[in-house]
Length: 88
Image 1 (cartoon, rainbow, N blue to C red):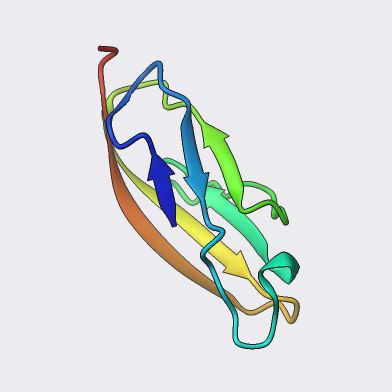
Image 2 (image 1 turned 90 degrees about the horizontal axis):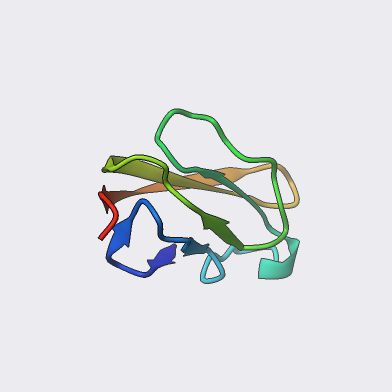
């Protein structure tokens, strides 16, 4: 997945994008996406929309997770480190 912008502070709306996700049997339109923004295993509800917008309330280093689920219920996960600074 990707996110933008790359410089994030506590006032930034961050766009997370999982549209490059793929599955051998399913089209991207058939996949479901769950996000964990703060590495606490607090997953969002599954959504067919690969994009999400999120705002971090505190500066810090976060392990953002993406879980992609196919039509048979199989899933894969990836994490990326996101650094958030005080408002600029």
